[in-house]
Length: 107
Length: 122
Image (cartoon, rainbow over all chains, first blue to last red; front, side, top):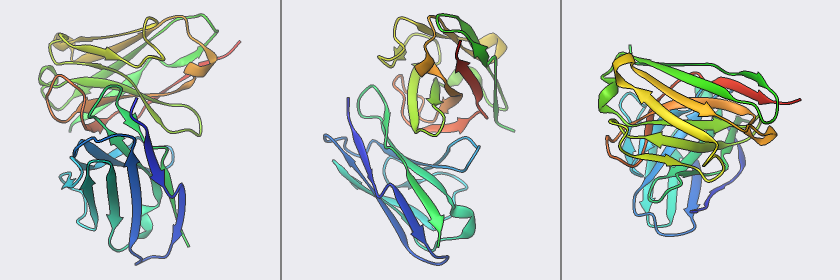
């Protein structure tokens, strides 16, 4: 199975800050990488697909980049409603696997 | 409105069975592959199973292979997960999720249900 390692596991930042989360795959997954946001008690929400494509309706402050084994997810200016846990997910190989999550809190 | 609504969760004893359902609305269900993804309490996301639009391609995580069966009824716009030989480690919220890409293999999950809780305990 392809292991997805996110860092950091948790993060505290202030409103307006630029926030970056990284995701590393245990092998080359090309750009077969998605990012999700999950708020407490809610279902995950797709934000970024194919490493860098913004899902329809998602604010432009969210972005993704990378290919191969190293990927980055960025919030350009943190908003209070962005408090959530973020997951990366690879679909290059079965089984589909997720990172362990990054919990984002407001400082 | 595009929507997925799961049902069928509950409390079941180890070794027991449960059938989850997911009702789809607001989109052409028969055109999309569908998935089950679960989340144990306080834990991360785990993909469970996928089924292609015509049921020709079905995939399972090793952790459920041989115990769980995914199926769908396109006439009823419904997805199912038959869970047998349940174990304590199957305790989780189970989400159904639509596949964004339309391929045989799962890719991005763009629509999710609200989830249904399955608790396996004696």
